[in-house]
Length: 127
Image (cartoon, rainbow, N blue to C red; front, side):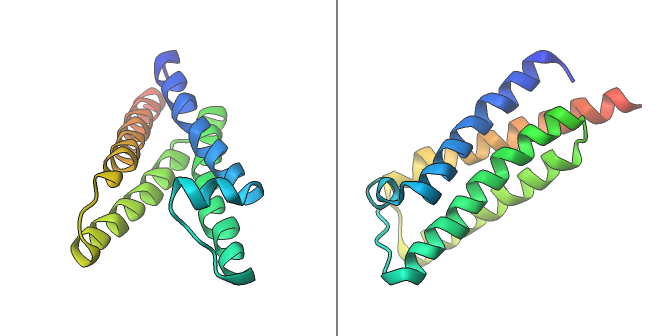
């Protein structure tokens, strides 16, 4: 895989990891940033586990894909981000539109594109 694509993958994995760490260990950052208010222990557990886990897992999968040169990790990240976007689309239909969706939706779409490009470059190098 070319160095530029590796750098793009690593560049986009860093914010995911930072946001995941914040969700797990500095929960107050997410209550403001994402307008989340956990209700009790289960709410906090969900923010730490589900949101933190999704973000950290996606970021680490991107890094593992670069380090192992195994493009399956990029496909897994694409799947995770696609499901998140699908959830956002369901929310737009059910709950309405907010301009607050634009930045994360664009970021998730760009992550999918970068991971797809990395997957394509990785698989073309193996042939």
